[in-house]
Image (tube, rainbow, N blue to C red; front, side, top):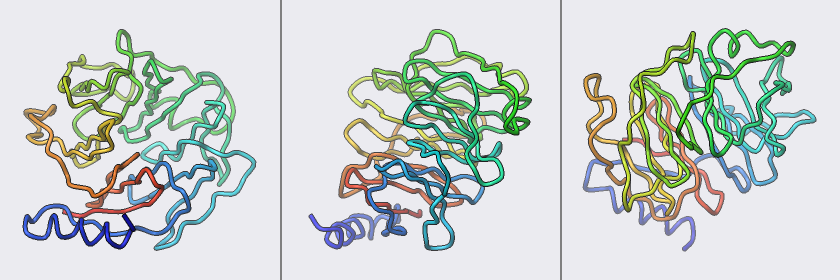
Length: 262
């Protein structure tokens, strides 16, 4: 199915439902991953090249280091290299952060950073995440008991996906200590998730292992874990997603970027 036919089909699916309306985003060759926060959008491609969105164009981030995973948020822009080494962007260049090796990282927390080794989750409190300027070491707090491969934080706490595709949620994380309120399973069974993305406005999106996109319904201050998953129709399988300022960014398995608005 061509991209043009796909977009026509997608618009026809949602035209009468007042649902999400999607269109092709700025072209980035063979995109694999995208992250949006605080009005900034960053992305990586299959060559582990990194970009930030400048208007309607992607601007290449020059430097000796390439990231397979990149994130931006309250504590700055961070990346994970092909060797699972953590970097923070300082003065326009990625600077190595010594210590823990990670496969995924998320800067969506309020002053803190979270990440996963692929089987265990960690939190970096404010004193280290904001203060790191390229020198010295940092100290991570390990999340006990859960084998989380993906970890994301937003307005109403943090969300994780374990190695079996089950989804977990904790109501809050203390940015100064990384202390958490306790995790509970909120989704399991036949719907297995690849990742869950928590946004700064409280919305939460899931991406299933089958490449389908979901919105978590029923979230509010008194029920931060929500009630159920609602499918957002897409005409192709997706591999990654992120949300910020009214736009849901998605990357297809074929490497095409789209953004959707409600």
